[in-house]
Image (cartoon, rainbow, N blue to C red; front, side, top):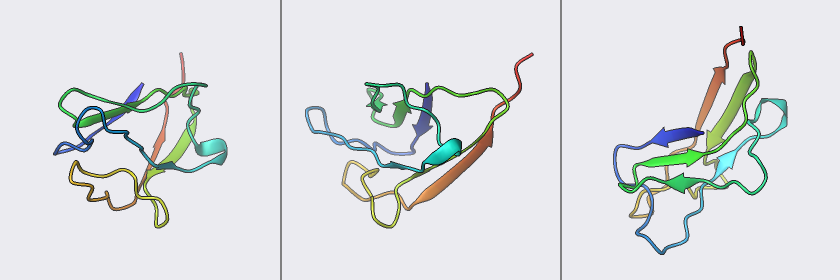
Length: 92
């Protein structure tokens, strides 16, 4: 599981449907196991998405884009599009 931590509550109150826009695709996009979805912590500051990562692999994904802006504050202010890149360590 990997998470994004925000400096303020980012999900609306309980009972409201939450959509998160993770953008990307291809070989560098982390694999999300079937049936898994993002979830929010009780304080609504951490969004966690279960992913399967390969060792020694380069990954790239984004939150929001020019067209999709569902990752937003509790007041529905969207996060500016951001791209994350990282490489996993090799297994020994």
